[in-house]
Image (cartoon, rainbow, N blue to C red; front, side, top):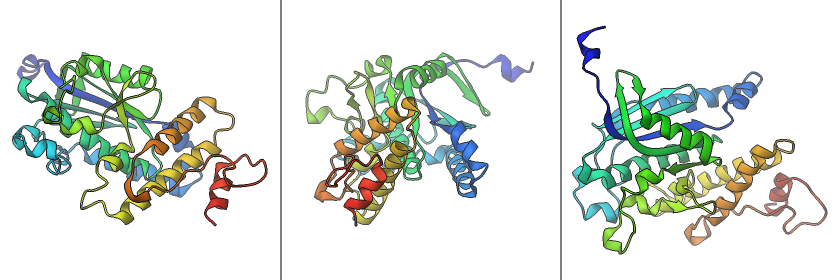
Length: 291
């Protein structure tokens, strides 16, 4: 033991645990598909880059009206973020002052939303949990009850490709939201799902930032089109895996609920919509409707 290890202590932080869904199957497919192998490498390299704290910047926050009328310095978490990437998971923790938890949480959510959108346009789904709690994070080492709580939220409760927020953390955020003046950027991302849980999914990024100057119509249409293809492929490849099929069915519903202006969202058709016969593939239905 050295003197440094004798002085370690826990710190109350925001903690997120994110896990790629179906990773074992993706790896199995990569054995016979160079394209899938490259997808794994590129996706894990992208997550590995997030270990650089400068990646958790305020670019996605400073464009928000809800942030602009506040102290932008409180939203900056670049020097307060620790991210560790391991195998198919990442753990992120953010230190904060008690009076800036809403700002810190906003920046964390916006960045995680970007990460999720980037992965999903390449066909990668993830699931996660965010909470607050004690954690120790330094020198590539991260542990503590807060991380355990975030992991259990992801593995036992989230079920679908989404990131859930713990009730413990929600009680510390700015709820109930009584007026627009009280709103923070994260309020645009979070929603209460039909099963009672609160959080956001990988497609929320496009709904919130659809009017961003860097989100051109062509980028929006292309990205959502690739996401639609991911969902359709998932629906058509899970005939004998009900537990996986329900995740893609859930995503199909959430995709259709996205509010994208100017009819820019590529339509995801119901099975056999506008077609004749008794086809069993969403892919075929989509092709017939886009001839």
